[in-house]
Length: 261
Image (cartoon, rainbow, N blue to C red):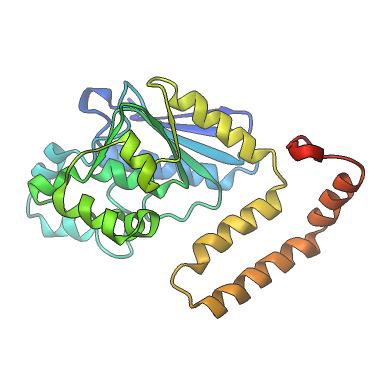
């Protein structure tokens, strides 16, 4: 049985982890299926954005520790988790060229937190919980948690979560920038797909270039980052997309803050 379900809703792909009996914890099969699903998303031109979610009221409880316990100290198996190898959670070491939104119900903890912050945005249920729960078991963050979390919410907030392993509720997650939207429980998938559709309606060359520029500037000094942004922006201007958009504005589109084109 597939442990990952892939649906396409117009320009939006929905990737769902389907192991509700273990709160969508990731085992090797699921990790491989997640990578395959997102590699397909990256390569299909008809898909403009993706939503990652979990079935059965949980986003993801992290890596399946029962599966990990079976590996034990098999160093050959452990070497497959190291640098240059796919992340044990699946797509965590892939740089996806398209916007991805996490629809978070229930728990997004340990590796599940790492999957959530791998996404560009997070739509979160009001009773959702984030946390580095693997702190209790001596299992490290190895799917981007120590890299993406401080870049996303700042080092102080990130260290608070990483060192203590404490649960972080949706309202606190929103305040610290971990959540982008908070919605009633059971409505995250619908809200995330709606948000993804809104993003796909914008001129794509420009939106994707701006997104790429945000990620590429991290770690660069300001002058280098500004030069990189200028190069990326010029490519968009030379594509003709901006001239087309300016023409629509000149003909009356977008007046009074309207987003319709």
